[in-house]
Image (tube, rainbow, N blue to C red):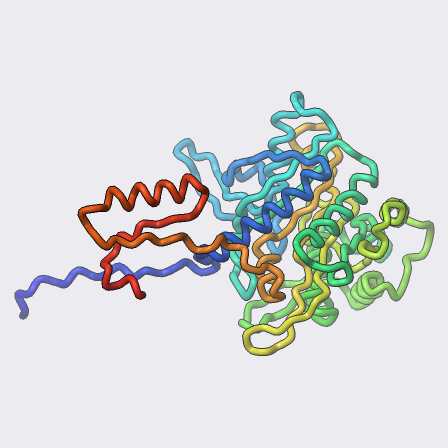
Length: 404
C-alpha cells in the first residue's frame, strides 16, 4: 500500500453545452449591428427601456414553443422566500409585465425598444444556443393595423441598414385568426390548436412532410428523439396542409384575419414597401401569445457551410400582435404588437455572407520598453497617444516575446 498522498484532481475547464465564448472580433461585430439596428428603431420613434434578465416565473407564463409543461424550457430557481424565478426566454413577456406595472405613468401608445440576452433551456443544435441576443421594438396601446404595417416596414429598413440588399430578404406576414378559422372549420379541438400551430411553425426547418408527421402521430429526429404530434385525423391534416400551402381557401365569408391582412397590404403599398413585404399563409410563429397579425423576416440568400453544403438561413426575426399578454396583469384589453430580431442568428448569417466586414477597431499602437529606468517616460508617451484618442498599449511582457 502506497503512503503517497493522493494527487489533487485538476479541475477540467469546460464550457456548458449550448453556450459560446466570444472574442474581440465577434463582440465588435455585435456592437456594430446593435448600433445599426438602434439607429433605425430610433428613426421610427421608439425609445429605449431595460428590464432585468430575471423575472417571476408566473409573470413569464407558459408560452415557450416546443413545450407544453409549465416552467419547462426556461432556467428556473427558487429564492430564499420560496418564490420561483426564471431567466427570461424572450424580451416580450418582461415588457408586458413592465407596462402593466407602470401603466399609469406611460403615455399611450407606448413605443419602446430593448436588446439583451435571452435564455432557453432546450436541446442545443447547429445555430441553436441556450443564450442568444435579441433586439425588440414594441408598440403598446395601438389597436389599428397601421401599427402592424409599421413593424413590417421597420423590419425591412433594418435588414437594409445591416447591408442586406433589397431582394435578398422578404418580410412575410400572416394572421393567426386565419388559421384559427381553418382549425375551427375542420373541428380541431381547442386543446390541440397550440400543438397544431407549433407543427406548422417548423415548416421551413422540416418541410411539409415533417409538418405532416407532427400534425399526426409525431416525428423522430436524427438523434432518435421523438416529438409527439397533434394526433389529427387524415382529413384534418390535409385541410391544414392545403391552407398553409395556399392550395385551398376556406369556404364562407372572408375572415376577420383576411380583412386585417388586406388592410396591412394596402398600408404597406401606400408607403412603397410592397416589393419587400408580402402575405404568406405558412407563417404562424410558435409562441402561444400571438392573437392577430404575425410576421417573419427571411433571408433568401443561399451560401455554403464549412463542408460545402448549401445553406439557406431562413428566419432571422419575427413578431406579431399580442393583445392578451399585458391584459393578463390588467384585467382590461391592452392592444400590443412587436418585432424581434435574433441578433445572434443574424450575425452568424451575415458573417457567412461576408456582410459584417472588419468592424473591430484597428490594433493599438504598442510602445515597447527599451530602458527599464525610463518607464515613466513611456507612460507619459502612452498617455499623450490616448489623450489624442489613439488606442495605445505599453508592452509589459518579456521583451524576448515581442516578436510573438
